[in-house]
Amino acid sequence: MSGGQIAALICAIILLLPGGCFLFFGAAILPPLLLVAFIILGLAAWLFSFAFRRPTLAAAGGAAPPPLDQGSLPLTGEHARRELELRGYDVKRFVFGSRHEVRLPGGAMRDFPDEAAFLEWARAELSGNGDGSP
Image: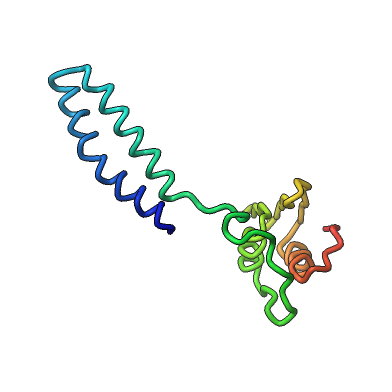
């Protein structure tokens, strides 16, 4: 977490108390206080979302990392999925049939019928000599 995210988290936690008080007293005593409560709680929710957002790939490291050497290629499908997601790929694994659907950073889609085909493609893609065919 960056310093700004930590500050947003602290402010969001602090805003929960006055927001909750305005919500309670607005519902119990003075209904116009509900508007103030929703504004404060909305701000707290926005700060929570800012505090827990994931940095984009471009902000985290700029360009895509260099290709891996053959000795460090992932051996399992889960490691391959993680490495591809770090490089900007969107990987979906379907439980039934071990089917994989991959959206490349350029927007193209790849569909793999089983784990072995996906893993073979992922190793080629991560080593830098992917030919683009499933």
